[in-house]
Length: 309
Image (cartoon, rainbow, N blue to C red; front, top):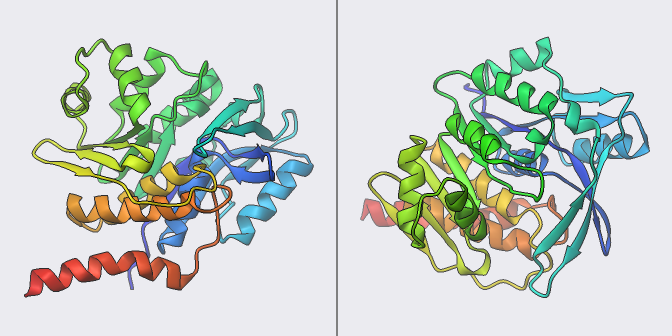
């Protein structure tokens, strides 16, 4: 029996310090968790401090079924944290602590071996704010198999990115995921011109030889743009608790169904449904029951029935 796909979240793991308390976060960890929810082998490749928050993070990841064998321990730097304030629509604003463990990701034999057998790797710009981690992430990406799917989640956090960081990140990607605001920020950084989302997405697609661009738009849905197809989604009504992790859930859902060969229409509907559900929950890694997941997956079943008729 073939093993399920190996999906790695590469980069930061941290604690989101929410008004309601702390919750495990960091886009790569969120992605790996959601990949596991879909039945893949989700692995976090990150670095934690040898401290109480680090120990709690290990425990929290193990409790939700994440493989932590590739999470490094740092005796010199503390576990990362991010202060989070939510606006009236539940959208988060982050204050991210500097010089923490995930700023010192190390290229190790274990990571070399892991990178050589991944099926999907998701990474972003934030963990590349330090030269040490940026170099390690680049080596990881260069060592992935040619058939591996590499997803860059732009994840722009002021002041922790530069044009050079974005260019380096995008050149390795097959899929680029950004939110609506990030699309315009990135387009401005590369002086692409214009203000039409589809036009800008196609320019980015061409400039970096990407297979797919995913633009998330919160309650207003998403836009998926490939060379030959544009799929817009109007969004799904949801009572938002907080939007933390919704974008990462979207990315994981896209990854899962993209490698299965689902159509962009199917991927769009499923990813929007799943992200909307995550936005109704507190924190980025809410428990998902089999019944809840099946409710989302019913869309694929319905589409399959239609195709067979």
